[in-house]
Image (cartoon, rainbow, N blue to C red; front, side, top):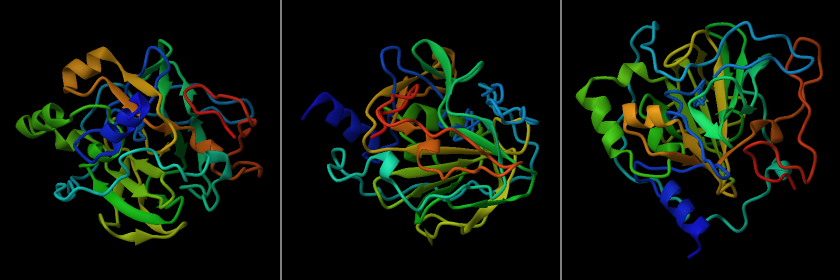
Length: 300
């Protein structure tokens, strides 16, 4: 088995472990607990894209902050393993060919894109990197499923589903020992049924449960600011079975939270989301075919 195949197997075997990308330096993020979450979400700070209003809300910071939101259930602790392929699916479609995706917020503004940023807990090529996109409207807005699928996680126990490259046992033990679960964001992770996974972070409240089947456009919960966020927004992340490059997690975050040093499988969600040209809504340039976006796989 090749090195990339072993990396994928380790990351997606459902041990409290996961993996993600980086080219040489390899980068970081606290499974979206640090996300802005990342990320999972939520996960970071950056200026608005050209033609997009400057963010009214700052996404996440690298250090988790206890949520001011009402206490929410953590969600059931994971018990059984979720079957995942031992190696990348040879039949997995390229991101640019995926269909059926829609925006998690019907009229959300893009406040933080995927890619290099000014501050983040993930690192690519030695620079802070945001491993998802942040969308914002208002606190309590409806957050919708971007694609049909099956819910893998719904609550604050989600890290084993979002692609760390290494064991999460020390991290989970620390959360339990120091009673830190409520510092994490409320997150939903969905198996999109095509080899990809979608992650939605920072909910105020969720209305779905692990194992539940959902359809694109179905209500998942309500926009909030739980976890490492300074304002209400949704951190949307996308995980690809074809992405084997790792992203490094900032060393101080790794030491403090006892996290693995890398994550894997993150790609730019804008590759699969439809364009939104209308005034006041999200608009973005789609990646050009054959061009490698920062931290992303080659679009084909």
